[in-house]
Image 1 (tube, rainbow, N blue to C red):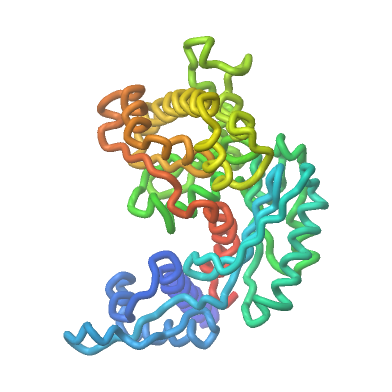
Image 2 (image 1 turned 90 degrees about the vertical axis):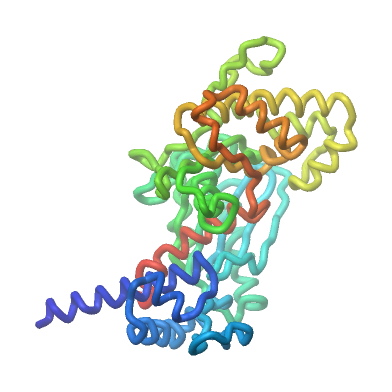
Length: 386
């Protein structure tokens, strides 16, 4: 009898997680729509929604009065007061965001730095910020956990940062000090993998099952790969290091470094130098490039050619339906989207690129924070009452 009870409880928890996942990833929807999408019966859905409401995970709203056909069904929405913290440490700043269920960014803070932060610096900054938010703006919220998006190689098994070269982090543990100080579960993962997941769930790649995501930040270029709807991690969790590929730059005048790896050739630092900008976010970089003149224009054109070659290689090898560009890589494309896309197709096999779409990250500067928070929400979605 005990085994049967346990099995029933497991099924119920799975169904609770499915309903919560649905409204979190797909948005508010009526009970009747949830019934149709889950295949559960109406009474089961009503019971599950009631439990989620009682635990403060969802709220029920009045049905749309304009939809009068049939019996009106209450609308179930994720609670904006259930929050996960997303963190992205970079060489020039530490970004922290509070993300609500449903993927909405509730708060964000960018703490600029004059030096590259150590792990201790990052931990201290996050702890100070989150504790302040808990006292003030998030005092009425339920904090689920913390997700950290690191620009480097992160071991999937335990979140150990094996190598973040631009931060000079090697075999560093962020999980223990953060979880101890904040008394919250902490997950750590590669920034671009988390960005890929965020864009797949909430952004430009929502309707695509095969996606290449390239992220350009101050630390270089990383990437995420989604095939048949699943994030590809690799055996240790290190897949997606697009910045270390060599895009095959044939002409010496187009090459700026000896080894020619992608992130050395396509570089935010080079764009900053060409625009004579010392620092700042991507919006500041866009403005500076527009005002900088011919030297900056030439550097943008050179980087666009190299990036197009790299994406052409990705199209030939992986045949994605969507390529999403985040960070400064989106700036390079947006300079002339039609011309850039045409260049990518010219460098790809025609059949591999015939259905390819290329887009800038729809979540903009929030993509990594939302992706990091999503990793923190995973535990809740797996077991809402755990």
